[in-house]
Image 1 (cartoon, helix red, strand yellow):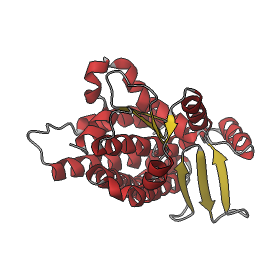
Image 2: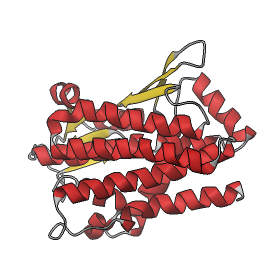
Image 3: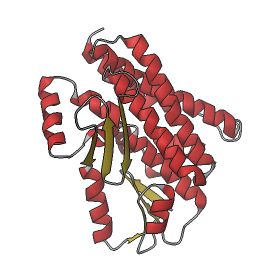
Image 4: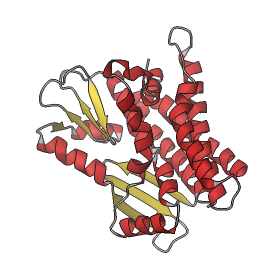
Length: 275
C-alpha cells in the first residue's frame, strides 16, 4: 500500500475511531464505556504506529499490535482519571508511557527506547539511544496559552497545578455558557465552578493533546525535508509534535454547532468517562 494512502487512512480513522464506538449513557454502564474508549484509543494508535512502522521498515501489522498496546494504556489512563481525580499523577504517567510506546513503535525503535511527558509548556524526553539521554523542550503553543491567560488576569492555582499534574487557572470573571475550557494542556476553570467532575473532564482533554504527539512525529518524518525541519526545531529546544498531531482531531470542532459539542469524538470520550 502506498504511504500516502496509509496516511490518509490514519487521518480519517483518527476522526472516526471514537465516533464508531458511540454510546448512550442510559444503556451502557460506566465499565462498558471505559472498555469501549480504551478499545477506541487502541485502534487509533495502532493505525499511527502501524503506518510509522511500515514507513520505517518494521511492517504494518507487527507495529499496529504494539501501537494497540500503547493506545490501550492511554485509554486506561483516561478512564482512571475520569473515575477518580486523585489518581491524576499515576494516570498522567501511564498515559505518557502509552504514548511513548506508540512513538517508539512508529519510529521502528525497540520498546523502551524513549519516554516523554509534558507539564504545561515543558516537554521532557528521555532516549537511551543518544549521547544526551535526557533533554527538555518548550511547547510554543502551550507557552503562548499560558502567557495569554496570565496576561488576561486569570489566576494560576499553584496548589491544584501541583496536585493534579496540569497547569490550572481560574477565570477572573464568570465564563459564559461553560464551566471550563482546556487550551492545549492548560485548564481554565470558571471561578464559580470548582466541581471535581470538571477537573476530571478537562484532565482527559489534556491527555488527548499529549497523545497526539506520535501522530505529529509521524507527519514530521514524512520525508527528508520535513525531518530536517523537525531537527532544526528541536535544536532550538522547541517541540511542535503535539500541536501538529492534535490539529486533525481538534479541527472537528469547526464542523459542529456549540450546542452539539457532545457529539464530537474528543468530547464524547471526556463526557463518557466522567458521567
